[in-house]
Length: 527
Image 1 (cartoon, helix red, strand yellow):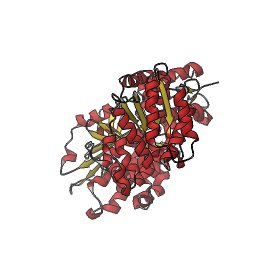
Image 2: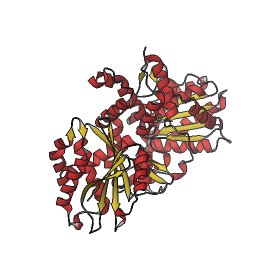
Image 3: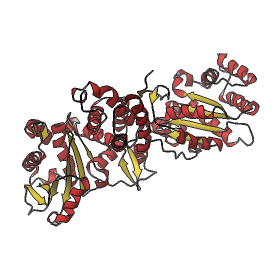
Image 4: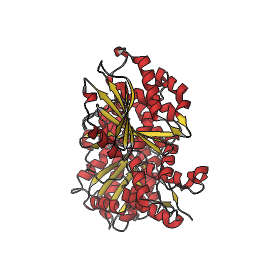
């Protein structure tokens, strides 16, 4: 059977092209060997289940591995303690082969009893007895543990689990406990209704730090593509394609695999990539990125759903995207906590950044196409103007800037009460979005995002346009020397660069001009 790239469920080495997880699994096994209780908390579709199954396989020779998935339990299974004890006992009997005979009899008794006789205390006494009788130490792994986090029976289960683990020097208990899900134990209050907040008992969060990086680095992606190349012989430049996939995804496992799946399965059906132009090329990756950004999938639906569920999170993401605010990482801030937990953002040098270019562009597109944004005059004018900017398949960026300045001046000229300095980036993106939508993509260069300057990278039909969005105050917009401008051009290895300056100096010269810098050209637009 030929391997495929997988984006649904866990990856299986015999069936799927996948990253070599052996080094990560060895690190996690080290935590298990030292008897730690820890949680693996990552955003949706970050490879948690694949990692857990690989770990269970690695541990099976040294431990009795109890690997469970709480998604397999129903709502009724959490309706009362006795119902949970029955369901949990059945899961153990179904999933664990190496059960001590006496314990197996007791679990069968729990699983078959219909009266509300057995409690969590009964279950944990049985589990403790199992730990005492077993010749090998027991390791408990629970995947999707937060799927039941808004239930009192689950919280009581977690309390018992903690109590036995803490007292394992007095009473036999699991050697190691691993809980996996999106929500960390300390964040399970997010799944409780306000009136149920008293259910959360913070001392339950006894988990050790889990610092194993589960993202895919370029070398990881290269290893997966080497496996693919040995089967398909595409002639791709593995190092180049791996680096490009990482640039767009920052190693988010689902995004890497989804782009690879599109390159492998979808692009060969597109006329442009059915001949001499290989899907496994820079052009192919850009096309796959465009397809990914336009599709509906469970990951994107989950992200947008979280924005609608948590207004404070939505506000933070908006500030990061449009106003260039440097948001300092604050572990005690709920919005910061959620942004990282749900995968929107990552911590970098003490500040928050959007996790990757794919998320960033998808989020820009979401905010810019909200009904209130589409009702803006600039958006409507861009839709009317869009056909005049494309000539022979190429985007005339200078003309885009000229028309933007014309419309912007008409709408906002002299109306300070309707425009704030930080809104400049949003208004240009609002105008640009309908012009390139469906054909081009854009993203912000993370290293330049601040309140003064943003470098916008636009990809349109495999041609790249670098646009520096700048906020100028007083006379500073005339003071940059030619060498500094030339250095900017050199940084991106391009001959032509664009700069859009939002200037709040009354003596500014509105319009577009070209500055020749040796063999390079700067197209400067001032509004």
